[in-house]
Image (cartoon, rainbow, N blue to C red; front, side, top):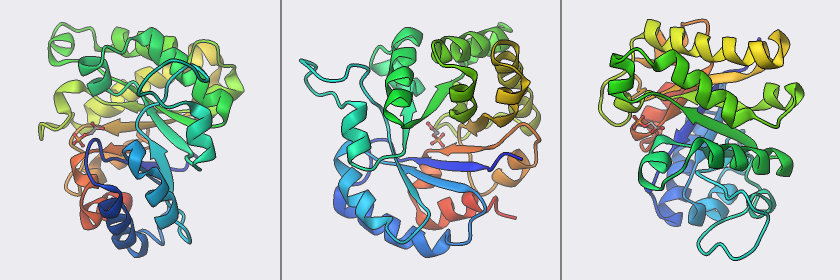
Length: 250
Ligand code: PGA
């Protein structure tokens, strides 16, 4: 029922020229994709990426958005700016933003509200650190992170967002959650959404797995019933690898 969504998170990689090149390589490789394909690029690359995806189904995403409409927030980018630049998706609350840039569940929530109001689709990242999993807090934590992030949206709006379950210990480490672990925790997130916004919304919301997802493990992860796609870091930087992930390497 849910269309899978595979999004590349380029992080701080690729200049505008390199962005155009990578997208040009990617285009023919993902032309027949059954999934929604998104590349989340550095802000400065957005115009080049929007130009490069023309004639394809690839969508452009940003990696963050500020929560205020405008004003004295040096260095920040508003939802209206992204929208006018033809961005469709925006990653919000990535663990690197939480860890290195002081983002909290509350600011994540404000960013989600700003994005939805502007007509952008947020990709909301949640996930536990290693010691939190070991202490048995994973389910409570992802439930809390998800429900706070969505606060203020109605069920219809919730149905359209994307959530990315990214265990922090699996990001950029080569460690992946097992297929079952990822499926189980994504099930917990969906259940939390159902509890607050109803089954219909929960059945529609797309929940990705992220954390060292690559051509080798994508097939197993995507075979799990709760997993609707992936947020791909390292493996999104090579057209061939990313295309394999987009096709679930079947
Ligand atoms: P990774 O990054 O695929 O390199 O682990 C995923 C992410 O941080 O979104």
